[in-house]
Length: 91
Image: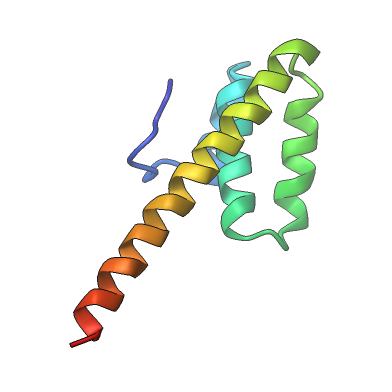
């Protein structure tokens, strides 16, 4: 399951459901997203570590790259939104 746009179901409960189903990649994706939003949550970090230990090594490297790309795209979108807001604010 690849949810790129709508993150409505990116919750800790959904990550647990995925982990319990053995869908560790999906669970890890959600935990990474949640940690990106609230980096000070130790419980999320522990849950991500537990799920990550269930993932095979090679795909995890690709997963890190895809997460970096996803984060970069999100930052670019925010940057563009800020530029548009500045144009509105500046006469």
